[in-house]
Length: 388
Length: 126
Image (spheres, each protein chain N blue to C red):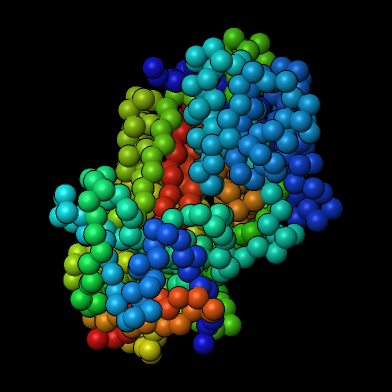
């Protein structure tokens, strides 16, 4: 059964905070929910489905359901890292299509900045992880995992650090118009290359920000969406896919988006050339470059050429991307950047992005979530949204 | 020199780290599909057969990709190394000038002590 047209994103909220030392994580989740409800023009009692990932404190959805006083008949807490929220939107649409709920709330919140997280320190999830004994001793962290993917892409396709830097440059052009962006300064290719080397070949400016905050979206069935006053943003395609180390059959030059992308496009009945704005997970510049190839915006190996010379800058480039400034400049709340991609897609489709970055006559948006690491295991989730 | 965190040894992976303590690099081989895999499992990730056995690897391979993490007190090189047996394993390149590193460079297994735990296999220029 397709989810095409079965659910609309009726509410979206990105918290303005980027550092929240005086708030609890549960409080932040609830503030996200409240913000999205107000945006939608819905009340808490209208919510009958709730979705959250591992950033929600407590066992699955339980603590947050209790904290927020939600009375739902459907819940899910799939955790695929930063792509969880794309997965939740997809699954919420499935639940709505099956009549399991009418109004589904998805929340994300975290405080990694206040808690001192860094991308150069190991993140251990669980002592029983089968892969951990073969990764922890070697100092696998977030940055060097992606750096290994970047190194191989450079080796196989001649991609350059200058080309990677263009991804950050484009994001910074957009961030200058976002009053809430953590980094608002426009930067140049030279600036990126001059920033300190974190894990070669990735410089500091090739890496996303670490921020507190979060966001929420609300999905609803068509009858509910039509009763609300907001512009209609319809989900027309969604797919998720996993890629791992495959027992040692390693190829870091592509991601699971080679599966999630075509499936989502097929369901939506559109092609990459139809997309007006692409919100692409940008944990690192290399993430964007590889995902653009895998999603079919350019051919494999040509991502470097595609992103260069401002091609991703709204207004001048061919493919406007991450018009809020993305994870590279604006926000990467809770170390999970999928939610903000969905929220900016909704802004663009509602014609509510900043006038300087708003894509004219924006009808189709793609919001790509990437969770886990490109160097080891990840889940890609692709959403295609349409303004009605 | 970076302190090497001890691997969390469990009943399934213990032979691997016991062998590393004796200077041997083990791989799992599946007698059903005749393929090696890594990290080692009791059930083959390729064909899901339980007819897997430990085999000693030659310990030589080439660097598939690498990165030197520089934004830490003691920079170190993480890498994927493709072994002669055909599997690619995550490891560190050690005993090597970082300026000499390159994709495709030939390396051989060495064994380094971890902090209060089993020695772990790493790779040095061959």
